Structure formats: structure tokens, C-alpha cells
Image 1: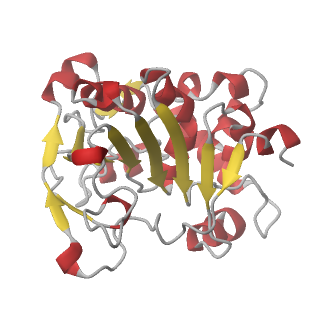
Image 2: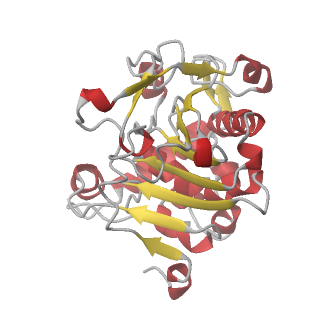
Length: 289
């Protein structure tokens, strides 16, 4: 049960579901804007790499006019990998979920779109789509020398934010930090961390679209999803990158990957968007575990 303290800081936005539609849903292609990939080769020497050791990456469409000092940073989704085999498979995934070598230019639409009619609030902001290539919602900090797998999600997150700071985000007036699915979970996990990079003069809000995964029993009465999260945390070495306010008291500490155990400790304003009919929520935690 989430305590009253949580609701003092938490705002649930239902009316803007359409505005915050996940990137990638069907939209008239005339409203697409193709945005090139930006790599950060300099981050490699600091251990900020994708699963296969390739550099982190993002896409950016620069803001103009009144939006030039406002930033929207969107974290890509794409599930997680909980075994060596799963993570090796991701390094070959055609969407680039484990390697920036495979990533292509991105079509910006929805909340990242440049069409004023479809995206009236953010169309002239600096809009950033952060590529997800670590498999643990940007929390990992480990290395598998045998299989040459780099679980460095936390370093990737830091490297991308620091690169954006150097491109003007340091002077942001407003910043919206969000993501969808596994990226939505990452937005929750890293909400206060993202806020810490910016000055006290920046108005920062976080939002999670379909990222509130439940710690609950499945139809067989088992906590299979909790076991799944525990394997992710152990494989990627994520514990020290989960919110310390949670890990200092929660046992097992891998339960701090579940939003309901994190949200009460988040200090930055957080908005949650989750459908009652979310297919992943129904299938994974409740049916398959």
C-alpha cells in the first residue's frame, strides 16, 4: 500500500494520455522528422558503453525560439536481459538494444514531434531520444570478461546527461525527464539523479509512461516477476545504483527495482501514466510472472 506521503508529491495525469503517447505508434508519416544518431565516442574511455562495448548514443532535435532553453529528455524502452544468453542476443538486436553499431536514425513523432498541432507544448523544445543499450534500465555497473559483456547502464546514463549539459541543457529553464516501459522505469529510478545534474534554477519534472511495473503474485500465487528482477540486478551489478533510500531498508534489495518501493522516496515532482489494460502489465507480472 502506498503511503499518504507519496501522494503529497505524486501527480497522476490522465487527460494528457494522448499527448504522452509512446513514440512509435502509428502516425501520419508526413508528420515524422528523421533525426540523426549522435554517438559519444569519448565516453568509452570512462566505461560508458553498450552491452557490446560500443559508445552510448542519442538523437536530438534542437529547440528554437521560446523553446531554446527548454529540454525534453525521453528514455527508450525495450525490456531487460536477465541472463548472459539474453544479453548476448541483445547485442545483435536489429533495434540496437545492445549495440550502437546497429542503431539507425530515428523518426520523431508524438511528444517528440515537431508539428505544433500534434505536439503544441513541446514542439519547439530541445527534444532528446536516449537510446537504451544496457538491458537494465540504466542501472548496471559490472563486466563479464568471459563473454565480453559490459553492464554499464549507470555510466551510460551519466555520460549522455553530461554530454547534453555541454550542449546547453546546463542552462535549461525547464526540463522534462521521461521514458516509456523499461525507459519509464528508468525515468522513475533516475528521476532525482537527473535533477541533481541541473541547477536549482531549472524547473524539473519527471514522467513515466507505462513504467510502473507491479510487485504482485501471478495467477499461480508466485512472485516470479520479483525473481526476474532479482536476476537482472545480480547480473548487472545494479544494487548500488538503485535509490539508497530504498536499498538501505528493503530486503531483498532487488525489490527496489519496483516503482512502488521507490516512488515514496522521490523528491522531484513525478507524473505517472499507466493504462489499466496495459498488455505487458497483464501478461508479465500477473500471468507469466
